[in-house]
Image (cartoon, rainbow, N blue to C red; front, side, top):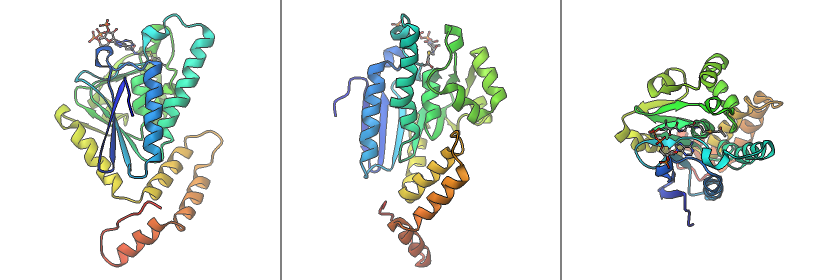
Length: 260
Ligand code: CAA
């Protein structure tokens, strides 16, 4: 697959998507969002891929936000469409992936960049990363799910503070607040992400996705997370993965999950 704004690579069951506009600090223009959507769809359809890592190219930024130059002249209708299309094509798409997605946050994660990291299921940051939702300093609000996902991760009070001050937080503070799962030295970031991805890949893909769906259900309006958990738990009993997992336990060997 040929892309202009992203790079993709696969190592075993781990697929890495790198946003590759370093001169613009990997800002998300519409072309990049479309390419990310294509890459995510392909990764989701490929049963050989069991975990995805999303990162940014260069040493400075994960993603410095939506491309401000692209939307600076937008009308009200165009602004609304930008938000709706972006949420559907990228941010909701990432969250709804049928395999875990890890954000390897290698620098600035601002605006749409932090929103992308928050759509991922897990975030690992390098210790030089800076995270924030500075949209109100531009006269807009976070439009790629940031008002919702930030509050889910850090609570209403911290989300109010971060969004209304437009401030950036250091990786260490982000870790303390639960905004990122781990902080490591920049040179260790990709290895750490791959180690976590490998741990995920060793487990039943069917069970991993069922668990992720159940967790997310609890954060979805109108959906009962406990009911989702009951349904997803029940489904496991009809899978080859369940047979393999329980048999391997009884036979005192490591499970080798078929993913069915
Ligand atoms: N959009 C477009 N271009 C961007 C960009 C963005 N979000 N962020 C950085 N760039 C570009 C800069 O314009 C600059 O390009 P030129 O060399 O062509 O001028 C290049 O990337 C390098 O950036 P800086 O020279 O600004 O680098 P710096 O080290 O001085 O500052 C920074 C780094 C603090 C991250 C700064 O670039 C910055 O504040 N960026 C914008 C952050 C931001 O406000 N993000 C929110 C965007 S709005 C949004 O995301 C809306 C939404 O939710 C839908």
